[in-house]
Length: 354
Ligand code: MRU
Image (cartoon, rainbow, N blue to C red; front, side):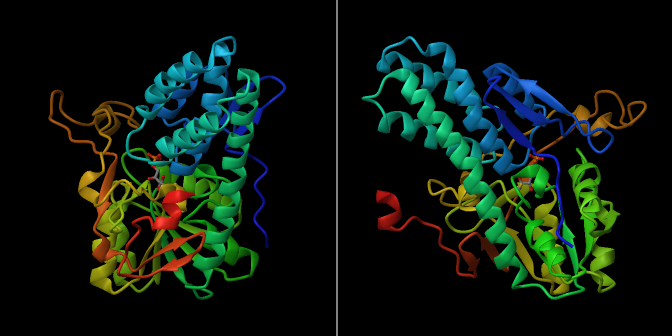
């Protein structure tokens, strides 16, 4: 059965010059869109996780720049470019860990510089085409990750996943959920365990929702139950997405991913990271160079509860991501194929030129 998603995560409405975003904070109760027209609205939507997931953030950023730069249509190239740098810097700060944000901004900058001799309306048109291309390429990357990932899995396997790295986080089938949906197309009948993913419950609210929507056999567990399903032999592989991969393979992903990798090693279960090339950071040597976003204490002390659950004034530490050491990763599944250790994502000379 081919999974069908009749909702899109990020949609650019050209006629009305607005970005429609599926509001992920309303899921699973409500599938509804918000209409965003300005740079500030989009930055707020990214910061408050109305749109989230590394690839979706990159796509959103690209369209944000198209809308954010429109007011500067009457300027000279130099003034336009100066404003672009300012707008891009503001956008990049919305969420610091997912590299797709700065990656998309970088692609838009290259588009502007490539067209520097053109009139500003033409540059804006080139930016719009580039943003559409980023979205289309993401679909293909997700599709290919699904095909390569499936080659590592067997029918009937139990698969554990963390956070949400599916349709809602990207285009098409997402990254970590793509091999699962591809298997669904081919009758693999996977049994998926979705970690609820404290503190923001991306697993409970989003992964459980979209897997169930697609008809995948899904069981929700609390994060601290992973060792139990592993110990019982119910999990044959762990698949997660990522927000930034360093050249040596150290990987930032949703907080709790590293714990899963350590558990998977203990129980002898393969641990795979699904990584589109937009998530590999050529400028980052190791995980130590990755900035980890810290979010507000209220996400832990009171969000989701009818009343606050922790004592007033308690100290809280709320990192949104952790780093999994490359030695714990069995392989990366990229759109180009499966990458096994030793990992080296340092760009080769030819890549640098293109
Ligand atoms: O804070 P979020 O919900 O944006 O975190 C998302 C994740 O950590 C995902 O696993 C990652 O972005 C991969 S999405 C294909």
